[in-house]
Image 1 (cartoon, rainbow, N blue to C red):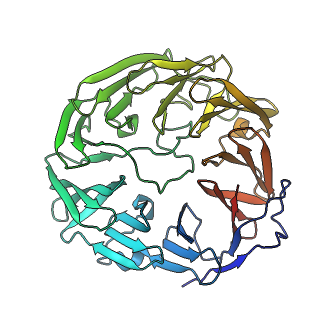
Image 2 (image 1 turned 60 degrees about the vertical axis):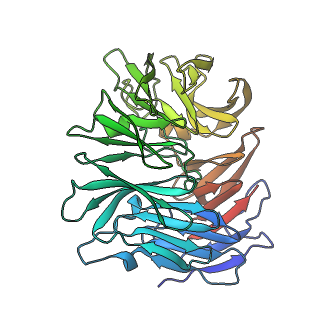
Length: 441
């Protein structure tokens, strides 16, 4: 088992980690060669939690203890079970970590990495799961009969069963909520953000039937079915929960670049609103200039819905009513990140990218920033925290990270580092010599 050594960075002197803002890491960790690339990180008390493809690492940010690996392989029931690490959900409930997915079932750990409970699911498999405020809700199917499936909920803190609802559906799919911002290329591609934070919604949706176009809504509290309705589009990636009870569906652009949107009330199954809009056809280097090339659907994030028309005009829409809250100016740019109070837009324009922050409530421009041409070449790794928008630039030999203050637009640059994750006011990076560093602003 690989062991990570942790060292405090008290003096702030690093051979490859200096930055022009004078910030120094809170701590740094040297990664051995056999540790897979990091995909997610969280913090509990003074402990650091990192998910890799092999398992969950628990480390002490004080540097007093070695890191502990919770290997997914320990939950393999047989040689034929495949560990799909990317499909295992990880959530932080109170002061513990819960993981859920195939074939591990549901397992809870303390901040120290000690196992608190385990639900192996016995004769079934938890094929998909999502984290909610106080529970894990997932679809489990019998091993002998994949069509014999149920929607089940377990307490996040204790692992006890809360409720179970049979699903008389062929190949049911959980329409998982999106906590964080979405990338511009597809609705399912997440921008790196606080991905361990459970969702705060009241309705969970399951798509089923032969074409997955029938959607059932269920109460997160007790599993009672709230609504059944038929959507127009069979592609599950064209469905996204909005608000606490809503579900949004959208079409692919037609020949005129028009996208149809329709919102459903998950509590009643009635249509809440519908509208048509022009999809963005802004010309980007190395990206198809057709309307279906890069902005297929609207952006749904943290209770907000934003669209951009062919003139580059962003519109913030109330997902409950479908009415425009505000509309920006033509050429304002494409949304690349959301904070609690700020939307970040990028305007690719030749040799540089204009990045601007708009007030999420009014659309008023708060600041502008001229960035390297990273968005022009293709969307870079990005992250949004409580007060910072972070993105990568440079190349593989000399990567860099720019940190923008969402409130002021002020910037700092971290040289020779790549982005791992953002959690609140903390930013985790990995340097070119495989040193993991935590910065806090």
